[in-house]
Amino acid sequence: MSSRPTKYIFVTGGVVSSIGKGLSCASLGALLEARGLKVTALKLDPYINVDPGTMSPFQHGEVFVTDDGAETDLDLGHYERFIGMKMSKLNNFTTGQVYETVIANERRGDYLGRTVQVIPHVTDEIKRRIFLGSKGFDICIVEIGGTVGDIESLPFLEAIRQMRADVGSENVLYMHVTLVPYINAANEFKTKPTQHSVKELTGFGILPGIIICRSEKKLDPQLKQKISHFCNVNENCVINAVDVETIYELPLVLHEEGLDDRVVELLNIWTGAPNLKAWKKIVAAHKNPKRGEVTIAMVGKYVDLTESYKSLTEALIHTGLDSNCRVQIVFVDSEKIEKEGVEKTFAEAAGTSSIDAILTPGGFGVRGSEGKIAAARYARENNIPYFGICLGMQVAVIEFARNVAGITGATSREFDPETKNAVIDLMESQKNVEQKGGSMRLGAYPCDIQPKTLTSRIYESESISERHRHRFEFNNRYRQILEEAGMVLAGICPSNNLVEIVEVPNHPWYIGVQFHPEFKSTPRAPHPLFKSFIRAALEHRDLKKTPGKLSLKKDLDKNGASDPSREINKALGASSV
Ligand code: GLN
Image 1: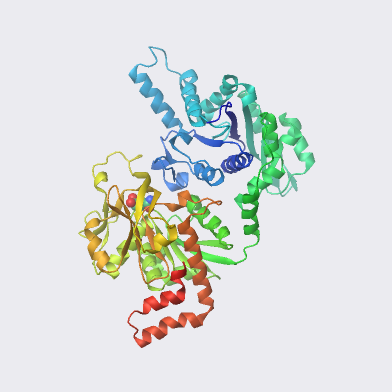
Image 2: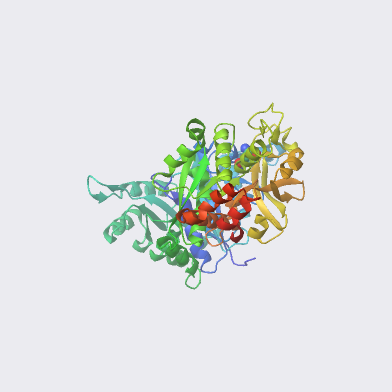
């Protein structure tokens, strides 16, 4: 643990939301970590929900899950992907949690008869949580959700204003992220929105030391000068975060702009230059994907909402960089599959490219489920690499139960509460759950991998730990019948005997996992399952280009070989995965 006092960087947003405040924080964290500092990041969400777990993906985007089972804002995913630090319950809190604690304190009589008020009781609770989350770190980046001027964020702004006096001005830096829009008709950038939001911020007693300006194109020095004059910051503290091709370029862009140099100067920290080798390698791979492009079909019902699958799309993209290819993700609407059939829907979604692998991610509810089951079947029967994650694993089990094991009407109790054949059923521990929030099977659980399975080769380990977020599970009553039909139960949770990983053998790559490996994949350490999946997709792509090899399937079928699929797998390179 560091004996130096923690230095705080408080990050606020101005003008509009969704301008990449979270990514700016994550990138700054990466830069400071690359200078050898011990960095953490906190996200303070001003909404009243206790956590985002109960919010619809339409409202909130992805719910990120930590090892210790917190359901959090998706920015924590960015922090973990950019900073080495693992996030926990302490790294994200909301107004809901703050008030929950304050009201519980009041009911216990902790406030000794005083009137409970926003200042000091609510602001003290906010500060207590900031201190808790930052303990032992050199640097704590604290991102305030929303935009300056939102009614909900006022207590948070007041708390971070007070922190300057609490920990000393030499230990606090305020950073404001704004948008500098380009107005086509006038053919110029406009700094007025930035001026206004900084004015608003200073009205709360917070003077930013650094302003990060998001813009479509590079800002010229005169514009930086103008912002510097109007907003009372040094010219070299106006940092331009210009749009980048890949988010993993942002640390390099911000470094070029001098962000980390200014931060260490302003906070009076002595460090060497950052080691940015890993980030440069990632960006170089993005700019020059030697192995071309691979197309992954992602089958889900929130296809218009890419934010709901943030960790997943990032895991695919950065794993692609590791394999030197560009991953193109095409979103396939599972309800469309139900209406128009698998082949037509896939063909339309793929456009001019063709699908190299199929991935069905997590999800909830019966809507679109038959389309997902059809996609799992299509992948299995056509030797297309298939990766099922959480609900994606459950639909693969249902498909196998119906079409291979012959269990008519097999389904999940989530889709049909009255079913007689719930191959996926509600967990015992979930049966009496009344409160929806925070009550799923959440966070990291151990899993034992069965030897000689594809998964054991991929993980190169017999015991792993992965993060969960679900209520339903593989029904152990169907274990034997599904195993006899050929399904491989490749991973079992030792503490509760739950099936966590299934494989379909005699197929190039067909794996379903009950957990969410995407939460643990980072650009500097891509997840082994994603690495292997992308490799299988590349092999599938290349095989399509060499029809000689593919025609083997037809020959074997015609000649009635005893186990054609084994031969096909050999040809398709399954053993090399
Ligand atoms: N709806 C399923 C369950 O609750 C799957 C959840 C998920 O995919 N995260 O078990």
